[in-house]
Image (cartoon, rainbow, N blue to C red; front, side, top):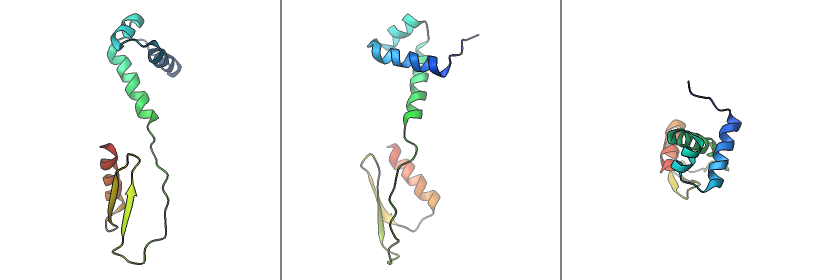
Length: 100
């Protein structure tokens, strides 16, 4: 049965890998772990490090219903549109644009 590492052990292993300067294969060979395990740990850490929410500034709604809004994503992309769709559609649009 495979040995289960604690979160601290995984963190220590990832830090040691970053500082080693070795290739993934050489590092894993030296520590007797599969490369896929190291890749899994790195991927999981990258997912946890990504910001989940972004700070936004809301302003008073425009008096003109046809007025447009502009949303600037952290990657520099802009979404400009009229506000005539549901919140779920806006969230989906932001998710798609932010993942590109």
